[in-house]
Amino acid sequence: MKTLFTFLISIMSLSIMAQSTFLKQYSYWDRAEANAVFEESDGYVVGLCADIGESRYLILLKTNFDGDSVWTKKFLLNRQSAYINDYAVDDARNKILIVPQFGGTENVFKFDNDWNLVYNGSLGLEFPYNIKILNDDNYLILSKSQDFYRAHKINSQTQEKIWSGDTLISEYNYSIGNILENETGGFIITTKNRGFEPTYIGSTIYGLNSAGQIISNYTFNQFVLGTTKFEDGNLLSLAYKDQNTTGYNAIITYQTDGTILDSTDITVQQTSYTQFIEDGNKKVMAGMLFEPGNNFFHTAIASFVNDENVWTKNHGDANSNTDKYYPSEIKKTSDAGYIIVGILTNNGSSLPYLLKTDSVGNIITLGISEKNYQYNWMIYPNPATDLVQISFDKKDQWEKVVIYNNLGTIVKEYTLPVHTDNFTLNAENFTSGVYFCGLINRSSKSPLNKMIIVR
Image 1 (cartoon, rainbow, N blue to C red):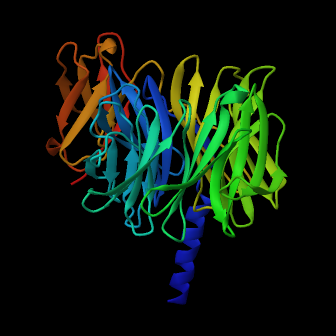
Image 2 (image 1 turned 90 degrees about the horizontal axis):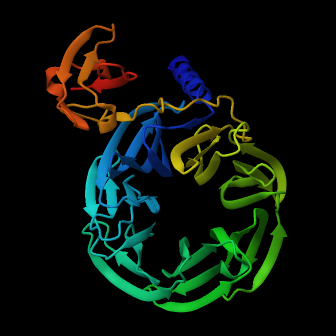
Image 3 (image 1 turned 180 degrees about the vertical axis):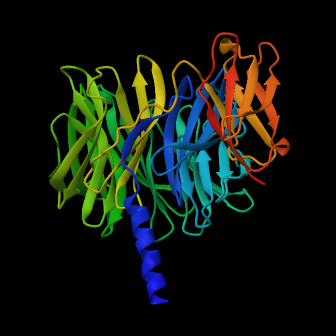
């Protein structure tokens, strides 16, 4: 038994060691923005919103530990400008994604541990915008109108409103930065503004009681509050300022009335960090490196111990002066590394990217775009048990769908209607296994996509 146990531990250790580091972009869509990432037992799930043809979708992209795509799921949205603004994971491993859609009624998506959709609505609110899972497992939701936010407590089981609090006055460019629950059941909410003009830089700290009523507020005008947490009864924040590509960062400890108790400068030249995670005695920062001379915008990560810089790494395409890598989220991974999800922009286009590093911020494999830019199509769900949806651009004028087995033999061909952008395949016509799907017309063939059928 001891030998077997040792063997299993060895296999587990090898599995963890085999997890890769990479920088990979996903170009399946004309325009897409990724704002969420979740680590699973066999890889990662990226949450993003993307344009497919003339419609906007919420997309779940599953990858393995090397960043290679495994499957996608998509959900139609009613606004071209929709994006994932916030998300949370509850104790039962349900994932709740907030996708603001002005005029829409399905802004909240709730998925179970297997990524099955279990709720899609607006929780009875006009415009859900931010979420916090509370200590009693209910939700604190912030809704947004044109000029203010309001806090609401929602029953997580019935989706019914428990109470609505006071309005939080918000200027035009302000958004919610942090939502914290204190020991007495009250809340601290910070707003942030990243305008480039000095008069628009600032953050407001609101103190709310357990019924959502405002009991205090204070505005910092000189900087923006990034990641914030409680520490010894006070607040600790990453303070940052972006102005004319000049970075400024400090860790500040302060009271809710704005009294700063301690401030430590952690500025790294031409770098602005907007968030941090704690990893043991380290604070690992994520942000942007600005290089004004050639306009490079790289993802920057750094580690600080006792406010001293231990290492700093910048990742992006050093050969491009137009690609800009904007990090949306950083998390620690199970193999002691870090993963960042973000948005790569270039001349008006946008793509999601994943950046996976080791424990000191290095990447070994840069990776490549997962799809030829020439074609834009996808298969979902994948794996599938009954129906498979195949979507593509009308402009490519595909004429046939061709299915191959793993030996490269054609097993099915389907003729497509003229001017269509999707096709539904009945998976019940196939035995369980791995297949490869391609699209053809008179002059070209698409790259093949893997299609997995399970029973």
